[in-house]
View: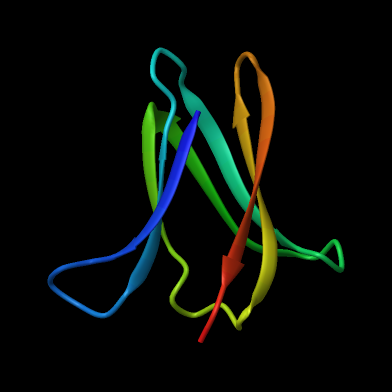
Length: 79
């Protein structure tokens, strides 16, 4: 599973793009280090884009749920 963060060309929104070649992503959650889920998005595709521009600066864990299991990836959002 590939996770990347970038600014959209057409706006200043920061997004996280998740690609799971050959796997179907069922749900993506962004969890703060406190354990609170701050964003959650249902999905049914192999690629998901999430707008994280509204999140406060900090360290988060992205939890990606597929039919094959759960995957996690740490992201750091700065100002």
